[in-house]
Amino acid sequence: MEQHNRDNFNTILIIDDDFVNRKILAKIFSDMYEIREAANGSAGLSEILTNRQKFCAIFLDVVMPGMNGIEVLRHLKKMKIPEKIPIFLITAEYEDEMAREAYRLGVMDVIIKPVVSYVVRRRVKSVVELFATRERLHTVIDNQNTELLKQAERISELNRGMIEALATAIEFRNEESGEHVNRIYFITKFMLENTEFGENLSKEEINNIAVASIMHDVGKIAIPDAVLAKPGRLTKEEFEVMKTHTTQGVVLLERISQLRESAMFDYACDIARHHHERWDGRGYPDHLVENEISPWAQIVSLADVYDALSSKRVYKKAFSRNKVLEMIWAGECGVFNPQLLDSFFAVEEQISGIYKEEA
Image 1 (cartoon, rainbow, N blue to C red):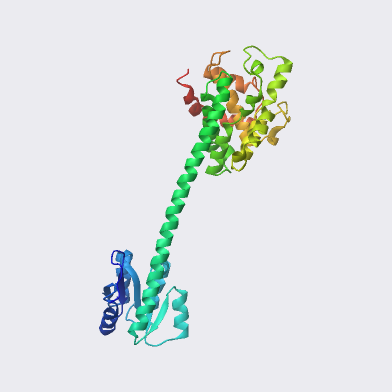
Image 2: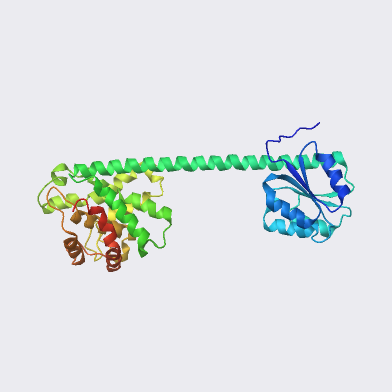
Protein backbone atom coordinates (compact mmCIF):
# COMPACT_ATOMS: atom_id res chain seq x y z
CA MET A 1 0.00 0.00 0.00
CA GLU A 2 1.32 3.47 -0.91
CA GLN A 3 1.69 5.82 2.04
CA HIS A 4 1.07 9.55 2.16
CA ASN A 5 1.87 12.07 4.87
CA ARG A 6 -1.50 12.74 6.45
CA ASP A 7 -0.06 15.51 8.67
CA ASN A 8 -0.33 17.80 5.64
CA PHE A 9 -3.49 18.85 3.82
CA ASN A 10 -4.20 15.66 1.88
CA THR A 11 -7.84 15.64 0.88
CA ILE A 12 -9.08 15.09 -2.69
CA LEU A 13 -12.36 16.64 -3.79
CA ILE A 14 -14.35 14.76 -6.44
CA ILE A 15 -17.00 16.82 -8.26
CA ASP A 16 -19.18 14.61 -10.47
CA ASP A 17 -22.92 14.21 -10.85
CA ASP A 18 -22.55 10.44 -11.44
CA PHE A 19 -22.56 8.47 -8.15
CA VAL A 20 -20.74 5.48 -9.68
CA ASN A 21 -17.95 7.65 -11.14
CA ARG A 22 -17.40 9.31 -7.76
CA LYS A 23 -17.13 5.94 -6.03
CA ILE A 24 -14.70 4.59 -8.63
CA LEU A 25 -12.36 7.55 -8.14
CA ALA A 26 -12.79 7.40 -4.38
CA LYS A 27 -11.79 3.72 -4.32
CA ILE A 28 -8.69 4.42 -6.43
CA PHE A 29 -7.38 7.06 -4.03
CA SER A 30 -8.90 6.18 -0.64
CA ASP A 31 -5.70 4.49 0.58
CA MET A 32 -3.64 7.58 -0.30
CA TYR A 33 -5.86 10.55 0.53
CA GLU A 34 -8.94 11.63 2.42
CA ILE A 35 -11.93 11.89 0.05
CA ARG A 36 -14.73 14.45 -0.14
CA GLU A 37 -17.47 14.42 -2.77
CA ALA A 38 -19.82 16.92 -4.45
CA ALA A 39 -22.69 15.88 -6.73
CA ASN A 40 -22.75 19.01 -8.91
CA GLY A 41 -20.74 22.07 -9.89
CA SER A 42 -22.43 24.48 -7.48
CA ALA A 43 -21.92 22.16 -4.50
CA GLY A 44 -18.32 21.58 -5.53
CA LEU A 45 -17.63 25.29 -5.81
CA SER A 46 -19.15 25.87 -2.37
CA GLU A 47 -16.99 23.07 -0.93
CA ILE A 48 -13.85 24.67 -2.38
CA LEU A 49 -14.74 28.09 -1.05
CA THR A 50 -15.35 26.65 2.41
CA ASN A 51 -12.46 24.18 2.70
CA ARG A 52 -9.87 25.17 0.09
CA GLN A 53 -6.98 24.74 2.56
CA LYS A 54 -7.80 21.02 2.96
CA PHE A 55 -7.53 20.03 -0.68
CA CYS A 56 -4.40 18.74 -2.36
CA ALA A 57 -6.25 17.94 -5.65
CA ILE A 58 -9.64 18.40 -7.33
CA PHE A 59 -11.32 16.07 -9.84
CA LEU A 60 -13.88 17.92 -11.94
CA ASP A 61 -16.35 16.35 -14.34
CA VAL A 62 -17.12 18.32 -17.50
CA VAL A 63 -20.77 17.46 -18.18
CA MET A 64 -23.00 18.17 -15.19
CA PRO A 65 -26.51 19.66 -14.85
CA GLY A 66 -26.64 23.30 -13.80
CA MET A 67 -23.07 24.53 -13.55
CA ASN A 68 -20.81 22.40 -15.75
CA GLY A 69 -17.11 21.79 -15.23
CA ILE A 70 -15.88 24.60 -17.49
CA GLU A 71 -18.10 27.12 -15.68
CA VAL A 72 -16.70 25.95 -12.34
CA LEU A 73 -13.19 26.38 -13.76
CA ARG A 74 -13.94 29.95 -14.77
CA HIS A 75 -14.92 30.78 -11.19
CA LEU A 76 -11.81 29.03 -9.82
CA LYS A 77 -9.59 30.86 -12.31
CA LYS A 78 -10.82 34.24 -11.02
CA MET A 79 -9.87 33.18 -7.48
CA LYS A 80 -6.48 31.85 -8.68
CA ILE A 81 -7.29 28.42 -7.21
CA PRO A 82 -5.50 26.49 -10.01
CA GLU A 83 -2.24 28.17 -8.93
CA LYS A 84 -2.53 26.55 -5.49
CA ILE A 85 -4.46 23.31 -6.07
CA PRO A 86 -3.99 20.98 -9.08
CA ILE A 87 -7.27 20.40 -10.95
CA PHE A 88 -7.90 17.32 -13.10
CA LEU A 89 -10.72 17.47 -15.64
CA ILE A 90 -12.67 14.21 -16.10
CA THR A 91 -14.51 13.64 -19.40
CA ALA A 92 -15.92 10.73 -21.42
CA GLU A 93 -15.41 12.55 -24.74
CA TYR A 94 -12.20 14.40 -25.53
CA GLU A 95 -12.71 17.53 -27.61
CA ASP A 96 -9.83 19.79 -28.67
CA GLU A 97 -11.76 23.01 -28.15
CA MET A 98 -12.89 21.94 -24.68
CA ALA A 99 -9.37 20.81 -23.75
CA ARG A 100 -7.80 24.07 -24.93
CA GLU A 101 -10.28 26.06 -22.86
CA ALA A 102 -9.66 23.84 -19.82
CA TYR A 103 -5.88 24.23 -20.03
CA ARG A 104 -6.27 27.96 -20.54
CA LEU A 105 -8.26 28.05 -17.32
CA GLY A 106 -5.51 26.25 -15.44
CA VAL A 107 -6.25 22.50 -15.30
CA MET A 108 -3.19 20.30 -14.84
CA ASP A 109 -4.45 17.36 -16.87
CA VAL A 110 -7.46 16.02 -18.74
CA ILE A 111 -8.33 12.42 -17.84
CA ILE A 112 -10.51 10.33 -20.16
CA LYS A 113 -13.21 7.99 -18.81
CA PRO A 114 -13.14 5.16 -18.09
CA VAL A 115 -10.06 5.84 -15.98
CA VAL A 116 -7.17 3.39 -15.75
CA SER A 117 -6.50 3.19 -12.02
CA TYR A 118 -2.72 2.62 -11.96
CA VAL A 119 -2.15 5.33 -14.60
CA VAL A 120 -4.28 7.98 -12.96
CA ARG A 121 -2.83 7.14 -9.51
CA ARG A 122 0.70 7.77 -10.75
CA ARG A 123 -0.20 10.94 -12.65
CA VAL A 124 -2.13 12.45 -9.76
CA LYS A 125 0.38 11.44 -7.08
CA SER A 126 3.24 13.01 -9.06
CA VAL A 127 1.41 16.29 -9.55
CA VAL A 128 0.27 16.49 -5.92
CA GLU A 129 3.84 15.92 -4.74
CA LEU A 130 5.08 18.53 -7.21
CA PHE A 131 2.63 21.11 -5.84
CA ALA A 132 3.54 20.20 -2.25
CA THR A 133 7.26 20.54 -3.00
CA ARG A 134 6.69 23.87 -4.70
CA GLU A 135 4.71 25.11 -1.71
CA ARG A 136 7.45 24.02 0.71
CA LEU A 137 10.02 25.75 -1.47
CA HIS A 138 7.96 28.94 -1.47
CA THR A 139 7.75 28.75 2.32
CA VAL A 140 11.50 28.28 2.62
CA ILE A 141 12.13 31.21 0.26
CA ASP A 142 9.65 33.41 2.13
CA ASN A 143 11.32 32.54 5.44
CA GLN A 144 14.76 33.23 3.97
CA ASN A 145 13.57 36.55 2.54
CA THR A 146 12.11 37.50 5.92
CA GLU A 147 15.38 36.65 7.63
CA LEU A 148 17.37 38.57 5.01
CA LEU A 149 15.14 41.61 5.57
CA LYS A 150 15.68 41.34 9.32
CA GLN A 151 19.43 41.09 8.78
CA ALA A 152 19.35 44.10 6.45
CA GLU A 153 17.43 46.06 9.09
CA ARG A 154 19.97 45.07 11.76
CA ILE A 155 22.84 46.11 9.47
CA SER A 156 21.07 49.39 8.69
CA GLU A 157 20.57 50.07 12.41
CA LEU A 158 24.22 49.22 13.09
CA ASN A 159 25.39 51.51 10.28
CA ARG A 160 23.20 54.34 11.53
CA GLY A 161 24.53 53.75 15.05
CA MET A 162 28.12 54.07 13.83
CA ILE A 163 27.24 57.18 11.82
CA GLU A 164 25.56 58.76 14.85
CA ALA A 165 28.53 57.86 17.04
CA LEU A 166 30.96 59.52 14.62
CA ALA A 167 28.80 62.63 14.21
CA THR A 168 28.19 62.89 17.97
CA ALA A 169 31.92 62.59 18.68
CA ILE A 170 32.50 65.54 16.38
CA GLU A 171 29.77 67.53 18.13
CA PHE A 172 31.34 66.89 21.53
CA ARG A 173 34.71 67.93 20.14
CA ASN A 174 33.02 71.13 19.08
CA GLU A 175 31.71 71.45 22.67
CA GLU A 176 28.13 71.09 21.48
CA SER A 177 25.44 68.71 22.64
CA GLY A 178 25.41 65.35 20.91
CA GLU A 179 21.66 65.84 20.55
CA HIS A 180 22.30 68.30 17.72
CA VAL A 181 22.62 65.54 15.11
CA ASN A 182 19.48 63.81 16.39
CA ARG A 183 17.51 67.03 16.05
CA ILE A 184 18.84 67.63 12.54
CA TYR A 185 17.73 64.10 11.66
CA PHE A 186 14.25 64.72 13.10
CA ILE A 187 13.75 68.10 11.43
CA THR A 188 14.98 66.87 8.05
CA LYS A 189 12.76 63.78 8.14
CA PHE A 190 9.75 65.75 9.40
CA MET A 191 10.10 68.38 6.67
CA LEU A 192 10.36 65.74 3.94
CA GLU A 193 7.37 63.80 5.28
CA ASN A 194 5.10 66.79 5.90
CA THR A 195 5.87 69.40 3.24
CA GLU A 196 5.94 69.57 -0.53
CA PHE A 197 9.73 69.18 -0.47
CA GLY A 198 9.34 65.44 -0.02
CA GLU A 199 6.38 64.87 -2.34
CA ASN A 200 8.32 63.03 -5.05
CA LEU A 201 10.45 60.96 -2.67
CA SER A 202 9.77 57.41 -1.53
CA LYS A 203 9.74 56.46 2.15
CA GLU A 204 13.12 54.79 1.68
CA GLU A 205 14.61 57.88 0.01
CA ILE A 206 13.36 60.10 2.82
CA ASN A 207 14.91 57.81 5.42
CA ASN A 208 18.23 57.75 3.54
CA ILE A 209 18.30 61.55 3.34
CA ALA A 210 17.46 61.89 7.03
CA VAL A 211 20.28 59.52 8.01
CA ALA A 212 22.63 61.32 5.62
CA SER A 213 21.81 64.62 7.33
CA ILE A 214 23.44 63.31 10.49
CA MET A 215 26.79 63.54 8.70
CA HIS A 216 26.41 67.16 7.59
CA ASP A 217 29.31 68.39 9.77
CA VAL A 218 31.51 65.29 9.57
CA GLY A 219 34.25 67.38 7.93
CA LYS A 220 34.80 69.27 11.19
CA ILE A 221 36.99 66.38 12.28
CA ALA A 222 39.68 67.91 10.01
CA ILE A 223 39.42 71.39 11.57
CA PRO A 224 42.13 72.28 14.16
CA ASP A 225 40.96 72.62 17.77
CA ALA A 226 42.19 76.21 17.92
CA VAL A 227 39.62 77.10 15.26
CA LEU A 228 36.86 74.63 16.03
CA ALA A 229 36.71 75.31 19.78
CA LYS A 230 37.49 79.02 19.72
CA PRO A 231 34.94 80.72 22.02
CA GLY A 232 35.11 84.12 20.33
CA ARG A 233 34.58 85.42 16.83
CA LEU A 234 36.77 83.81 14.15
CA THR A 235 39.23 85.90 12.18
CA LYS A 236 38.89 86.03 8.42
CA GLU A 237 41.69 83.50 8.06
CA GLU A 238 40.18 81.21 10.70
CA PHE A 239 36.79 81.40 9.03
CA GLU A 240 38.35 80.31 5.73
CA VAL A 241 39.75 77.27 7.55
CA MET A 242 36.37 76.55 9.12
CA LYS A 243 34.66 76.73 5.73
CA THR A 244 36.77 73.80 4.51
CA HIS A 245 34.79 71.40 6.70
CA THR A 246 32.30 71.16 3.81
CA THR A 247 34.82 69.85 1.29
CA GLN A 248 36.74 67.89 3.92
CA GLY A 249 33.48 66.16 4.80
CA VAL A 250 33.14 64.82 1.27
CA VAL A 251 36.77 63.63 1.30
CA LEU A 252 36.15 61.73 4.53
CA LEU A 253 32.88 60.19 3.34
CA GLU A 254 34.54 59.00 0.12
CA ARG A 255 37.12 57.13 2.18
CA ILE A 256 34.46 55.04 3.95
CA SER A 257 34.15 52.12 1.52
CA GLN A 258 31.01 50.67 3.15
CA LEU A 259 29.26 54.01 2.84
CA ARG A 260 30.12 54.32 -0.87
CA GLU A 261 27.99 51.22 -1.49
CA SER A 262 25.06 52.67 0.46
CA ALA A 263 22.00 54.36 -1.05
CA MET A 264 22.59 57.32 1.26
CA PHE A 265 26.14 58.04 0.00
CA ASP A 266 25.26 60.61 -2.67
CA TYR A 267 22.86 62.38 -0.30
CA ALA A 268 25.51 62.48 2.43
CA CYS A 269 28.17 63.95 0.14
CA ASP A 270 25.76 66.54 -1.27
CA ILE A 271 24.57 67.61 2.19
CA ALA A 272 28.07 67.71 3.68
CA ARG A 273 29.35 69.89 0.83
CA HIS A 274 26.37 72.17 0.28
CA HIS A 275 24.59 72.73 3.61
CA HIS A 276 26.22 76.19 3.85
CA GLU A 277 25.17 77.30 0.37
CA ARG A 278 22.69 80.20 0.27
CA TRP A 279 19.73 80.98 -1.99
CA ASP A 280 21.37 84.21 -3.21
CA GLY A 281 24.65 82.49 -4.15
CA ARG A 282 26.67 83.97 -1.29
CA GLY A 283 27.21 80.68 0.50
CA TYR A 284 30.11 78.27 0.24
CA PRO A 285 32.01 76.36 -1.05
CA ASP A 286 30.53 76.42 -4.60
CA HIS A 287 28.40 79.60 -4.47
CA LEU A 288 25.36 77.73 -5.80
CA VAL A 289 22.30 79.84 -6.61
CA GLU A 290 18.64 79.08 -5.86
CA ASN A 291 17.58 75.61 -7.07
CA GLU A 292 21.14 74.67 -7.95
CA ILE A 293 21.08 73.66 -4.27
CA SER A 294 19.33 70.31 -3.76
CA PRO A 295 16.12 70.35 -1.68
CA TRP A 296 17.71 68.16 1.02
CA ALA A 297 20.77 70.39 1.34
CA GLN A 298 18.41 73.40 1.63
CA ILE A 299 16.44 71.69 4.38
CA VAL A 300 19.52 70.65 6.36
CA SER A 301 20.89 74.19 6.01
CA LEU A 302 17.73 75.65 7.50
CA ALA A 303 17.53 72.94 10.17
CA ASP A 304 21.14 73.62 11.15
CA VAL A 305 20.49 77.34 11.60
CA TYR A 306 17.20 76.77 13.43
CA ASP A 307 18.81 74.32 15.84
CA ALA A 308 21.87 76.51 16.45
CA LEU A 309 19.64 79.46 17.37
CA SER A 310 17.24 77.37 19.47
CA SER A 311 19.90 75.55 21.50
CA LYS A 312 22.24 76.57 24.27
CA ARG A 313 25.93 76.71 23.40
CA VAL A 314 29.00 77.37 25.52
CA TYR A 315 29.24 80.80 23.95
CA LYS A 316 25.54 81.75 24.04
CA LYS A 317 22.13 81.02 25.55
CA ALA A 318 19.26 79.61 23.54
CA PHE A 319 17.17 82.29 21.89
CA SER A 320 13.43 82.33 22.48
CA ARG A 321 11.27 80.71 19.85
CA ASN A 322 9.89 84.07 18.69
CA LYS A 323 13.38 85.54 18.42
CA VAL A 324 14.59 82.53 16.41
CA LEU A 325 11.73 82.88 13.94
CA GLU A 326 12.26 86.64 13.64
CA MET A 327 15.97 86.17 12.90
CA ILE A 328 15.35 83.50 10.27
CA TRP A 329 12.54 85.46 8.61
CA ALA A 330 14.65 88.63 8.54
CA GLY A 331 17.56 86.82 6.91
CA GLU A 332 19.95 87.47 9.79
CA CYS A 333 21.41 83.96 9.49
CA GLY A 334 21.46 83.49 5.75
CA VAL A 335 19.14 83.73 2.77
CA PHE A 336 16.80 80.79 2.22
CA ASN A 337 14.41 79.67 -0.48
CA PRO A 338 11.15 81.63 0.13
CA GLN A 339 9.13 78.52 -0.69
CA LEU A 340 11.16 76.54 1.87
CA LEU A 341 10.56 79.21 4.50
CA ASP A 342 6.80 79.11 3.84
CA SER A 343 6.79 75.33 4.22
CA PHE A 344 8.96 75.49 7.33
CA PHE A 345 6.84 78.12 9.08
CA ALA A 346 3.72 76.07 8.31
CA VAL A 347 5.02 73.13 10.37
CA GLU A 348 7.46 74.85 12.75
CA GLU A 349 5.08 74.73 15.70
CA GLN A 350 5.18 70.92 15.59
CA ILE A 351 8.97 70.92 15.21
CA SER A 352 9.44 73.32 18.14
CA GLY A 353 8.21 70.65 20.55
CA ILE A 354 11.63 68.98 20.58
CA TYR A 355 13.06 72.05 22.41
CA LYS A 356 10.54 72.26 25.24
CA GLU A 357 12.88 70.61 27.73
CA GLU A 358 15.63 73.13 26.98
CA ALA A 359 13.39 76.19 27.00
